[in-house]
Image (cartoon, rainbow over all chains, first blue to last red; front, side, top):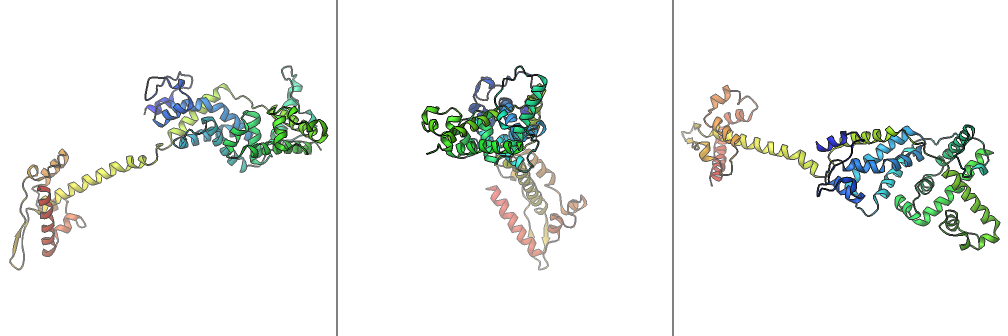
Length: 210
Length: 194
């Protein structure tokens, strides 16, 4: 009952739940301690885990599916699976690694059942350089958004492990070792996947140009 | 000897400096590969995730909360225990009540066999005297009191001995079966008195 009451509180309310074992507020706990509180049934503990990880989880989902609705659904699925599997979390890896692993698995399961996006347009690959967008005009911004859509579509066509490696390395700044932990592979395999992901990305974008 | 994918990746993402691979200075192909890798990394980095509405995060949290609250209890085996325990207790209580009720119904009955042998079931003492010492549940004691003096006719009139019921079966036993039942119940009563 206490748990359901905690869930029903608006997110804007300050979270003042205390731990089961002492009077420390949950917000001061690290991830491992928070997991223990979740398993002990402390009201609000899982809410806080969701609050901590909802943004990166949503972002990784969006990177895989490329639209808000699916990313939102997948994010919910990731947290639900995390809740179900929390008792199996042994703390051998960081919680973030574990959450990313669930996220990648959920996303790969989803995208493998869907046809990749195909909204590529024609533009030389040399145009894909980092740009300072602070002074973008509306036309420049539109052009940039089109390029982003093309790159996103090209990434969607990569093989699963290459795409996951590229996403985790490029957007979540994970080390090769962390990616290996998430994907359950070796550092060497991660580097090879990253190399081939970039090479294939170039091929796809070049092909869309010709 | 060209650079391996590992080496190119390490140099492209800055894990290793270019100076760690002198081969780059003399190999145009490897230099071009490095340029391409960096261009693709830059192109990928430039793809943003649109920031959702500020209200979205609270909405996502509440959706997760709803989904989680619809989940069964988290723990593995003890959810079964929680579900099964009330049923087990109820079953045990029902069996205990049935046993007590049956003994009260049968015990006072006296039957004469065709052979002239009369066997009399000893009337057990009142429930408060006879229930096993460990039976202290007030509901069981009350039930025993209620059914302690009911005879077969009263039970039948009360609808307790309808066809197909245990009571009906008891009232339609053969004498041999009654003898066996008597012995069994007597044995059980002796045990519970010990």
